[in-house]
Length: 152
Image 1 (tube, one colour):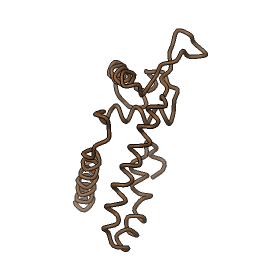
Image 2 (image 1 turned 120 degrees about the vertical axis):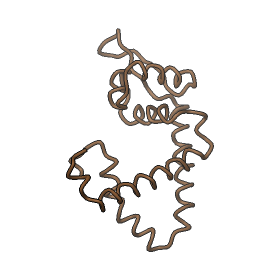
Image 3 (image 1 turned 90 degrees about the vertical axis):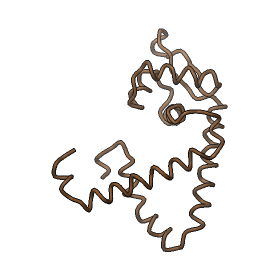
Image 4 (image 1 turned 45 degrees about the vertical axis):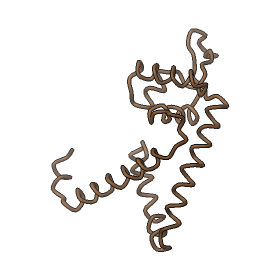
């Protein structure tokens, strides 16, 4: 971390509050049942395959920023649950691509509905001013969440 960033106590305090709030929201979302016992790494891999697939395991590992052997174990577990499948690569028959199954797509849809419902319930307890403030902050949160630093 740049020493200059550490010299701004207001920025550090804001970063700490954002970290705690996001962590607590994430924990509350994960505590709701319906993930079929999958880990956050498995769910993240499913979402990545949905968005960027079909992918080779190595490419999926790179996108998830984890080691290829770890991703191989994750993919194997997801295959056993019937959420991912491997198909031969059309360009290189020696390689396989990972694809989302219908069951995997349905699981992601169900989880998104559940999470959206949870958040909508929480937002219904906020004032109109609080919801407007959150809406105004969304572009900043989306930019921070993005892998693309240029979006900031």
